[in-house]
Image 1 (cartoon, helix red, strand yellow):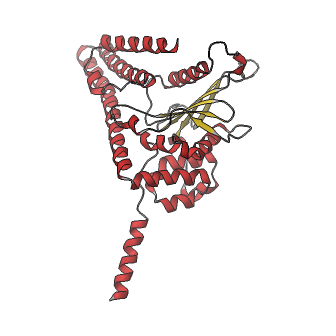
Image 2 (cartoon, rainbow, N blue to C red):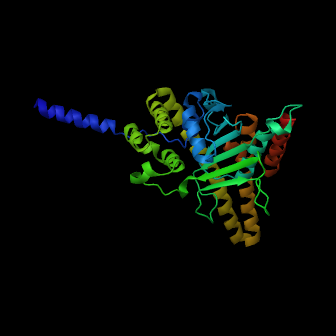
Image 3 (cartoon, rainbow, N blue to C red):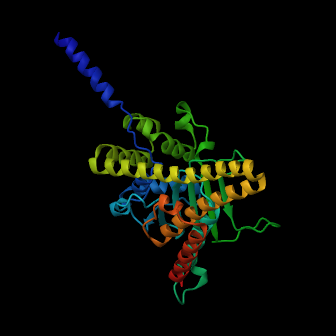
Length: 333
């Protein structure tokens, strides 16, 4: 009998040990804690080297907006980016986007340009400027006409192919375009391994993840995921952020779907042209809401509730965008 009980206990213990962590690095709280905490710099260095593939590897980073619990206290605020300066003096902005938003490429370019400009103080020599890079991991397809998962945009001469030195650069990494399998992951490229970690960390227990991703930068990232899963405060904050992001996405998707349906209904009742115009207005509303949230994020404001913005007329939303842009320009002067 004792032997049977011991066997049952070992089986139960085994089941407990293989429980998946249930923490996804796609959620901004986890992403920022993994890559935006100074004590986890090894993970950020590994990620940047995997994405940028520099001639001289990055050996150190200084995180300019380190992880802070207070950033996540307001569940209406969307905090997705990690800003850092690497060992070569380059400014880098890394973000996770769970969905494609209007003006994404323009925003990434704007971030890179802003970081480039912010390097100079009054009287500084232009020759001191270093490259500024925006990196976006996107959990949706961005370029629908291509299966290429990573794009790298630079300032380049179209005739000669000469790249402008120390300029701005934008990287997009579309996670769904990677074809990853567990048996092959240990032999995959570093960027493929990081994509696997981002997409699948929540589906494995810590021990299995460590076996699949043995490099030190992954081991550190896995330790952070384990701590989030185990620590009550972190788990509660993670769950709150996951719900906030889900609700935010639902609000935007509802606006777009409502606009599409309303446009079709109006098309049937009043003619296709007028119906499509109504649909476009709804689509413009969603784009304006995205823009307001982006500008509020840049200014460090708490983000306005999406459901509140949905009730406002287009003129009011447009005026808010104009006001926020004036504030942003004034801050940069």
